[in-house]
Length: 58
Picture 1 (cartoon, rainbow, N blue to C red):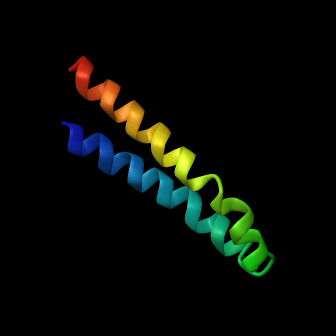
Picture 2: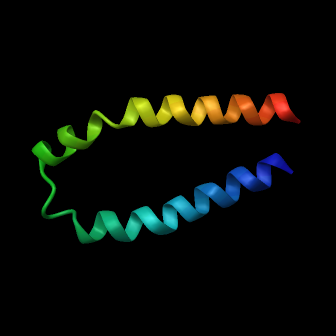
């Protein structure tokens, strides 16, 4: 059951991110990538905490 939730989340993320990346690809250079890279690790940590809570509850 968990694998289906993960697959659905990945599919939705890809369905949202791919059009956004194609739309803003020309506008975002290296400066834009470095601007958003500072948010990656906090988002990874938040997702790990959420997954840990999810695992501990079930």
